[in-house]
Length: 203
Image (cartoon, rainbow, N blue to C red; front, side, top):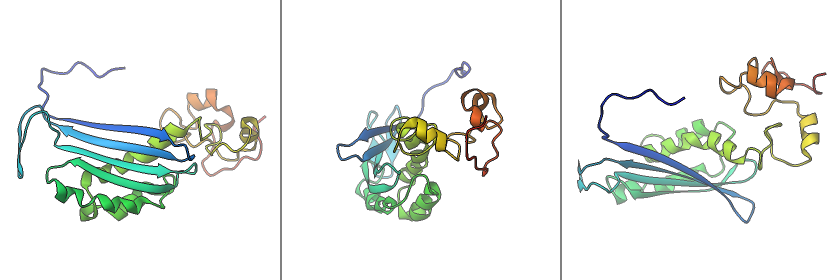
């Protein structure tokens, strides 16, 4: 369902976040996320006027991950920023993401390493979208939506042996364990209690 019809209004600012994922020839994955801020007019900045048509921010972050969602490389770029090269000096700080895992307290550890003056506010904000978006990227391709783990054996074998529910269950309203979506599409896990292990499919 779309949003309701808005009141009469005028666009004053647009922020766009674009994320793209690439499977590499070496078996790793590149996840690139970019943030762009634009205003439909000339904008006075401390460093001078930014003409209409040029972004206030164009900031990018690329992480390279393996099949277990561990980060093996990271780099940041400040293409457009209010303070130019001064903003770009924080780009190297994002190497601190190397060694973190998107499934293991990633947001907290990334924030601890990069918050405040350690990094760029907006590039650090981009880290927030990486875990769930990357799971979406790899689901059904690298990660099984039935077992919540990387494909390493036949689907039916993996599904039969799973002792924990798929990673997506219990993380949003639609996929709550006592909800109709789980009852219909994942009946084995309907009314599952988080932390409970199941050794065999329900009969």
